[in-house]
Length: 291
Image (cartoon, rainbow, N blue to C red; front, side, top):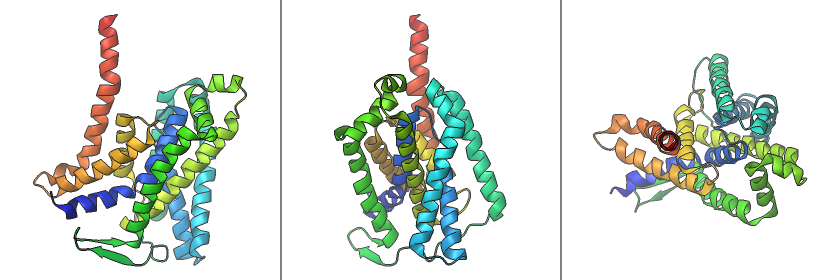
């Protein structure tokens, strides 16, 4: 196995970890596929770009502006479009709204930017390190993505399992009606979770844009991979989802270096179809046969 290819695929996948964690939090909290979240993060990335590159504001201020706006939009969209479906346990109507919202945001950004890709210059981290054993040069953004993946995923898993806040989150996600009867602060949990999800989505989109340039379509395929892994492994298991994303990144890199390279982009879609069949279609068929 070529270590250079594996390392390249692994590094590329680490850029999706913040979006994956955001997806898992929102998916396990609302029990539906929050396809819209990465695109709200994309709005935040465009705001940060406009503030830093066009308006010339300090990089830190531009970063905070994009993240905060994404968080506010996420909370607003949740309460305006999805909270009722979450309360009533309606995953499919919520999914339809998520798809429509995703298409709308992508179309709006394409129309606003005329479909052109732009590059982050001031916000890109400087410096690079060459690893001879891997045959790879890691940029500052690569190193930040690796460190973030190593910290965020285990940290979230521990926080959800070992802290009081994690227990409250799991209780609300498991049974909102029962949690309300026991006096748990459901509205506060909703706001905190969606704020965190929007912020992580913006961070992920900005990181992704600094590596691959910013465009309205840049998160289409990556978001589908995140959704596929979340469906296959369960959004309530963020640690497993992150590991799955990293494995998909390695697999795609290996396929891209083989004669089957044209099929590399289909891996996420195949995983999603297989997960839907195994986790939903087959159990439903088995129940039908038993009855």
